[in-house]
Length: 350
Image (cartoon, rainbow, N blue to C red; front, side, top):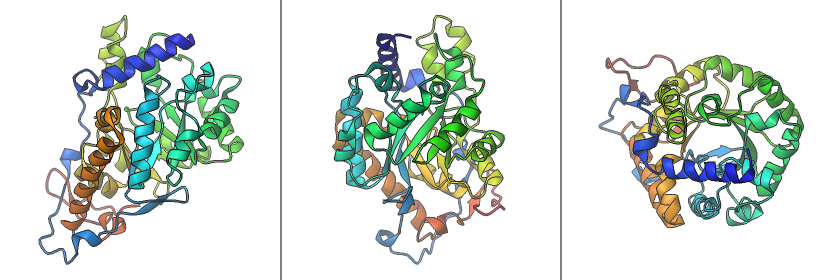
């Protein structure tokens, strides 16, 4: 695909995702199937609840990641700057969108060290598609993706469904696992692997960890459906729309991967609506919770709008801790969570 075609595709993606009616999956996240047992006597001071954690040796004020949402479109420069300013102010982590256009076109679209200057203290993650790793310059592009923003880690995103229904998408996925393994040994920063909304199964997660991947983002179904997004652009709309509800619901994906990999750091993303969903995700096994589409509209406006969005999420998460008697995230991971039958989950976190 030409550079112009790639840029147009990214602009189309932004337009479609900003309209939830066109992009939201019919599949539910699964978080509604769980509820916390309410603690009527928490014996805590709400303001003293500790939500802090660490990501790749960087302090994080709350277990939140602004997930990958924008790529190489020119207007993404403004969006990414708003996100970086907000992440720095809040002390939360930021993952930028795909750097493919910037890497292949030579036009950086704001994906430069300026982002690091805006947000010097946060955990900042770069992003490249798994398909690009198989290309002759794939490892070099990955290194450049890290260098161009001084990233603390690199996300490799898996999107086979999106590519399959996308006009001109990457059809050949043979050797992608081996390419990820090569990347892990070639890169000086940790590698994170994520899906883009269809979920990662326990078997795939285990295979990735065997290749040396440091962290998994399950990115389950229930949020943005990239099959639905591509259906808005496709010449064969009926083919793409058949897969609009495809994938493993986010809550199910977290729980399954955590049971299989009790020690592997996990990110939960895919339709996280609010801080209560975030609390459930952490109790089910996530170490960090990501939001993308939910904050995209705020990101088009200002950094203050992004800050206000996440301040609400953080306050919701803090209250969820308070009303489960959890003084910190470690306690939240042991809070009583009931399934749809009212039965407490038996397995402990990790």
